Image (cartoon, rainbow, N blue to C red; front, side, top):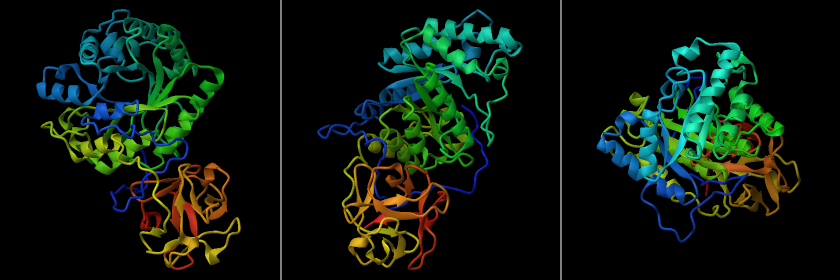
Length: 470
């Protein structure tokens, strides 16, 4: 876990009425069987779709009955908050101590929960003896540490965060200049190969923060590494997205695109340390639905039980307040896990701009491929009737699709014969934005008057980027 501050524009999310529902492009929303009754706890509701909903557990709080009651009732997965990190498990070189880690592990398995391991190789929370090493000696110490910890838990840990936070913040896309990085650029690969040999049954994950926004350089650098590893046979099974959303690193609607694109590389994805400044119910529901929409999303872990247990307690970012009461965000997550947004796409209708009150319109009722769309007074004609499909398309006339003519700001949005390309697939979000799957950009009206052209543009939550299906 880290403080997530990256330079950003003034983008902020707001909960909005008139949500359109959720369309997914790369994978259908995974919903519980139609006959299933709604579950009353987070873990049970997540299990309906084969996922987990977990929490970080601190060994020092296991004597707190309110804490353990909530954790045992609500969650079906556990991550040790600090107890399995390097300084806790190997305080002296070659002398391992699993007392605190085993306390968390034993509590979890005795209560029927799976356990995620966090973390084996990291530039932070190293004991002093490791900080004083460099070069080949540090590389060997890393290997020995991975072997020692994984041997103790061999066959018992479902997922391991093998390497944590290896990329630099900002716009460089570079590796972090850590002591581990200075042992050689192959240190991450060596860590994963060591971990595979140490416990072949565990899923091996790379875990990082500020990598949820598809457009960020850090995300792209991580993507390039995972793609390279998969191409060369480096044993990586999953990618963890910490998802510490706050005013410096806000949730962006392209998070689902990020998850989908990593999953398409052939790795599982997981939301590993979720907390959201202010605990917005809308944002919590959006994140939950993002995971549900990606078949290879294993589950979600929130980083703490109550606000008072959070490393960011002043931001009240969790699902339970300091007294253990459920917050509005809890209800929004539970409803999402129970399939609250899993209904079939709505039937066709007009798509009306929130700012203009005008409708998405094909000029002059044209049927020609390449006709750019516009805003026009709503009249209910066939050239304003849009039908969502299970594939994530928005169709007009039955056989023409809403189509992006490019992937950059200002790219024309037009009609084109449906052919299944990602530039014809859209994600309709609960805040009213419509985001292109290929580009990650928003459907945007370049004005509010009749004839204003429709284009793609970076999402910024303006009223010209919010739409309702009527």
